[in-house]
Figure 1: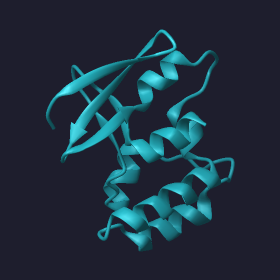
Figure 2: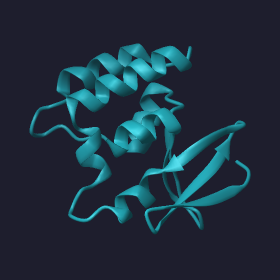
Figure 3: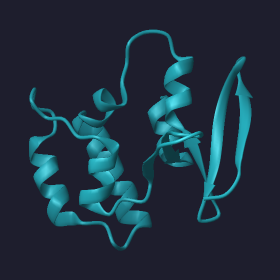
Figure 4: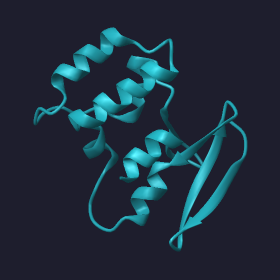
Length: 119
């Protein structure tokens, strides 16, 4: 990972980090800018989100683990279903979203995914 830049959107600061020459937008910063109680896990447990992420991975990631995805797809939308970003990446070999710890920590997503998250 290389440099982190920041942009200002409606008086809120959003970090952008480069990963493999692609820009990834900080979803954590987007959450902080939003009023109310909403968490990344709430978004990830939604069946439509899981479907969107799988289509994105299918288009951009030849190493996506479809076997593991089938298990998650069947569970998504259930009241007891929960998946973290780190679990999503580890089990599915996903590349569109990742969690980073440390100084510039947070959840980062490729711009297509970040825009969907924002909508």
